[in-house]
Amino acid sequence: MNMTTRGCAARMVADDQNRRRITRRGFVRATTVAGAGGLVLGGIGGALGGHASAGGQTISGGPARGQELRVVLAAPMTGDAASWGRESKNGALMAIDEINANGGVLGGTLKYVEVDLGDWNDPANVRQVFSRIVDTESPDVIVCPAVNAMGPDLDVVADAGVLYFHASTREDWRTIYHKNPQRYWGVFQCDPAETAYGTGVGQFFDQLVNSGEFRPPNGKTVAIAAGYDPTGSQIAKTFQAKIKELGWEVVSFDTVQSGQITDWGPVLSKVRQNSPSVFFTSDYFPPDNAALAKQWAAAPIPALVYQHYAPSDPDYAKLAGSAGNGIIWSSVLALLVDPIGNDFRDRYRKRYHTAAGWSYAGGVYDQVKLWAHCAALSGDPKDYRRVARTVEQTPVRGVTGCLYLDKHINAAYPVEQPDPTLAQPQIIAQVRDGGHTVFYPEPYTNGKFQLPPWMPKG
Image 1 (cartoon, rainbow, N blue to C red):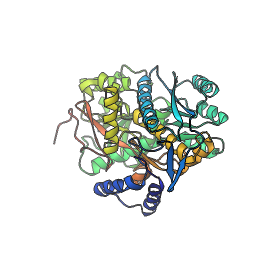
Image 2: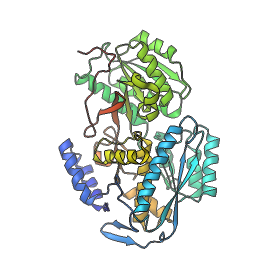
Image 3: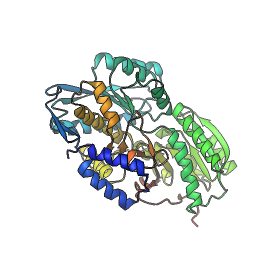
């Protein structure tokens, strides 16, 4: 479908002013109306057929006609995050093929270029990889799932003056951009910051207790295992601050070496000794968390277990098996369980004969579609500054929620932005029989919270 953004933008401004509470029925009705006047990137809409529509005016025959537009994916195709690289590649290729099948961007054909990011924890390697991209690949846009050693990538693309879309989930990116927006005009973080995790999950557990859905066996107590990296550390610290603010007691706080944990024995020994009602970990690597799930299942205590993000990765289910059942997880970048997200899942499975993961397949797909649509609306995909200004002014609905990057970083619903049409939702879900049930936040749910199998019912 080919849609304008005028109605979407007007509706979003009105909703932002009204700050109304949105019910599931009202939200679905509003989304349906937006289908007639707003932009939806879930299917093959957007910059198609060599023309685009902006404010009711048609843009056609732009400078891109007949040109090749190079979309460079920088992703870890090897190493400890290779599964995220595979998901990112699949999402990027889906978006590119759909756009090209509908005429490209103003007649320009998208060309997929893949560069292995390799060790995304090594600043020197990150600088080398991104330098090679801008020096040899002539990118019209760089898309990327995430960079753990964020910083060198930002400086390389800023010096080169190219467009860069990433989902590194970092609060420090907000600070970097705000200090020097003139330098980083072409960089966009297409998901919220990691600080939303700690705050949102803390509020969720407190609401779960206050609503009576969970009766903590040992009061409002929590044990924390923090991943020893910038993201894991920030999430754990934010969660600790929020949960203490809400009146909970932190009975233990340990730090673990993310990506290198096979034996959780020392941490679990302390957790079992302190008997918290909730065990929270911010390590987000699937092998680490699968090992934790198995070792927890061998001798569980009556407590809820939260693992940051990792259970959403397809590799987690393979490694953890049935031990993952009952684990709670969260993501601020997630395929939604709504018609748009489920349509993407169906198309992904049909193409790749496997299920899409929850984050990076849809996240990078949205990055490519967002760039392509805004490149067409700008009238010239080669005018990168003009494309960037269009991105700032164009809220869109993707398969992971609304991308509204006026501040070059997205907001999380509901913890940062109360309007679900202006943000990506931070979903909270639970592993059940190899699948996932999303029970927070409304209206992006497909079930209710249940006690895990190792806890007595009633």
